[in-house]
Image 1 (cartoon, rainbow, N blue to C red):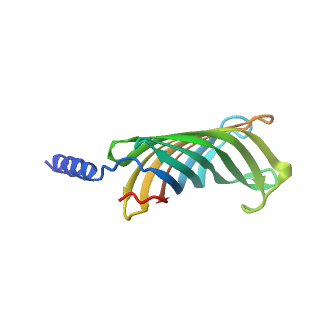
Image 2: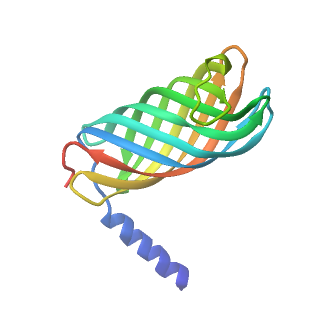
Image 3: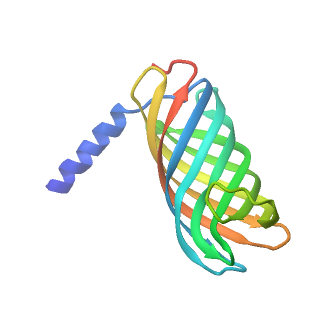
Length: 184
């Protein structure tokens, strides 16, 4: 009985939150924790905090969006003389909007892994570039004319060209989206 009431409540909630895809320009900022695994040289795994999944995009035809994606994460892990591993990727993405204001996004682009003594330090000598791929599934709630808040899950894959570091990351994130064209 308890589960039936909870399921009925969830169905009513999701049916009430259905919103079509959003037209026009938007900016999305998402951060959260993730779990990473390095498959080649380091052969380690652990927590990525924070993991990011940001976008600047354009929604069109009530079902799609294209975007410039910025995704990756910061790993506190001692590697040689370095204390941090920074995974950062910039690329293009495509979003397909599903019912109940959910979306599926696939992004791919150029990525780099940087080793640093301090998290804010940029070290050109300890940097490797490669390609990256990110797939995310998000749920959003519109709470104002131009603002939405959401939660999501993402899978990130990164591989460098020459040293061949190979990272995969799975995480959850939360964030906000600002729509330049009102959605209500």
